[in-house]
Structures are given as structure tokens and as C-alpha cells.
Image (cartoon, rainbow over all chains, first blue to last red; front, side, top):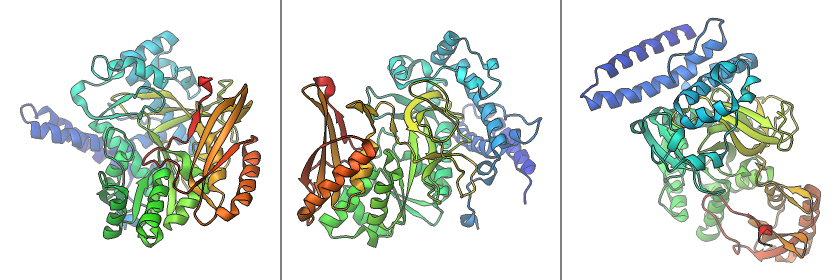
Length: 66
Length: 444
């Protein structure tokens, strides 16, 4: 069984990469608009896997941003 | 195999109660802070009430936050940023979806969504469809008009998301839709209870097709409470030879409730995404225990363009006493949405819910699916007229059916009725939400 912490860690990596892509997207609509969709998908991963962790440990915190 | 998995996400769906409550509190704080900081409408409302984000430390504190009613949203819209006005929390160019309420109770309310909101809609619906047995092997038919109303739009996207094949039956008429279901051997369908029954009637009476002979084996209903009314559910399941599941949602809220495959006689609250509170309609007291009805106050935790924070939905619900045998830890709403606070009306001094009449009419063999209720006055006294249809071939049983109908209505609603019997097919038919209840007393 995969550990939840491992899933959360990889979601954080995905998000960091997507946010870096957003910073590079000025003048590139195809990069910006597709990355926005990817970030929305990553948000759904956070809702499903990163956020439940905050109820499971005393030091858990919500992922940044809504 | 992914299709054999019982839950869409076992981590959230079986989370122990104390953990889901902790999660809900954190998520409430976040959306409340978001609305406070980004919506001029919400900020003004909360400042007037003297409540700030740092005041929310427990789920009891949530009750200090003022509720929002649909009429308040009507008042702020059709202004800049056009057309959403002061509740819009994101720049206009981040809005990617427009929908609006049906306007049944007044001027329609506009609902903006960002792409993330739209993903969230589909995510909420994915929980619903998976719980109702939808899997990637399903071919799902959607017989609704794809337009400005939310209807089954998010069901469409969720069916795609879970990997099912979607057949959009948008502009086809009812007979063409039935033929397409037959041609493609669709396995599942989503529609209002009114339309599910109407399609079955059309297939049988106009096309000579028994809907049971088609391959539809599960149907998701929304838009009306019928799929949680036992007599209506039985009629639909008998007509189609399919399992019928209820779902509750709304344009300005989201997909908040659903029946699972266990058909427990109630709706699961989609708790990771929504906080449901029940408030006594008369006293305003909050209801924690099963068995007492009240109106639903609901918060959607993750919707950002136009937040839904403590929205007074007017839906009348009650908690069920027991957890669902399916293993999901979310509580059940017993019997689904049983009515609306503004629908439940006093007639001759007695509270009358139209859903109670529906349960009686649909429970009597020999009566058609359609009916109409008209409340007016005869002199100073309230009068209720109930129009029903006698099925073809059952005219000889009219006397017995009338007696049964009168007795059941008296038993279930404590009221007497002026009954009108019409031939099958004489009353109006509806493609989406039916308008079967009319209160004309204000005209007198």
C-alpha cells in the first residue's frame, strides 16, 4: 500500500513545477492556459489527499491558496 | 482493477467523524476568510454582524456567521463587475463558466465559476457516480437540454472524469432519445424523476417499446425530490428495470448529497466538500439529533468565484438516526429533501408538503404518474383540488381508486381534497422540473 505521505509529497512537487511553468508563461498562451488547467487538477488532488492529512496529525496544515 | 474499488476515495469517504469535523472546521475558516477578503458583499455582511475570520475557532462559532439568501444575491447582481456584482471574488477574466438558477422563485441568480470551480463540480459528482456504481465500462446517456441551467452538466464532466463514455442527448426529442439509447445500448442515464417517468410513458404508449427491454440499469435523478419518495422511486425502477438513485444539488451550492448503491432511504452528505447545518424553521434553533425537520444551511468549502457560505437553501431535511451500511462515514439525510421551507404551506391550518401528495398518488395502482394540486379559496375557507389521471383500462375501478386515494390522503396529510379524475394523458407533461403545485389564495 502506498503511503499517503508519499502521495502528498509528489502532489507538492507537481504543484511546484506547475507554478514554475506559470511564471514562464508570459507571452505563451498555450503554456499559460494549459498550466491553469493542470493547476486546477492538482487542486483536486490536494482536496482528495493533502487536505485529509490535516485532520490526522497535530501539525498538519492546509495547502497554500484556494 | 480500478472498477472493483468500492470508493472513489476511501481516505475521505471513511474518515472517522472526529477527523472529518476537524477538516470541515479548517475548510470553513479558509472559505470564510476568502469571502471576507475578496467579496465586497460578504465583507459588508460580516462587518455588520461583527464577525471576523479570527472569531471562528469551533464549528459552534460558525453559527455566528450570517446566512445568505437567494434574494440577497438577486439584489447585488446585474451590476459591475457585470453581471455578477459585489460577490465576485476573482477577476472577470478568470471566470470560465456561466450558469443561472431557474428563476422558479423569482429573478434568476447568476453563477460564475472558474475552471478550478468547474473541476470541483466534476470532482463532487465523481464521488456521487462512483457511489452509485458508475464505472469506466458504462455508456451514459444524458437526455437534457445543454443550456444555461446547471442540470446535469457536471454529471457529464464527472462521467468523463471517472472514465465512462458519455452520449449527450441534448437537442433530440424524447422519441429520438429513446431510439439512441436502444441503438447504442446505453447502460446508465441521468434525468429528473418527471422526465424519467415521461420517457417510459412515451416509449410504451407511443413507440411500443418496453423501457425494461433497453439496457439502462442505473438512473441518477436530480432536480426534484422524487427519487427519494418510495412510491415514485418504485414506479421508475419498475418502468425501466433499473436502479434509481437520488442526488441533491443546486446551481449556487454544488453537488452536496447523494444516494449510494445501498439505497439506505436517504442521502449521504458530500462532507469533504460541504458543511450541512439544519435549523428549525420557526425557532432558529440548530438541530443535531435525528427525527426533527428543519431547513438546510449549507457551505461549499472549495468554490471560489462566487462563494457559498452559510447559504439558506430553504430545503427541508432531517438527519437519519443510523449510519449507512455502505461503510461511508458521512451522515445520511433521511428521505432526501422532503420539501422546501417556502413550499410547505398551511392549508386549513395544517402544514402541507407537496411531496406527501406525490407519495400517495404514485403509490396507487391505476393512477398515472402525473397530478396537479391547486389551493384556492371557497368563500373564506381553503380548498385543495387534486387532479389525477386514471390509467387506460382502469376506468371501471374508479370508485375503489377514489376511496383509496381519499383515505390515503387523509392518513398522510390530515386534509380533505376535492378530487378530479382525468383520462390518461390529459394533464400537462414536463421535460425538466414539473410545476404541479399552485397556491392561488393570494389572488382572493
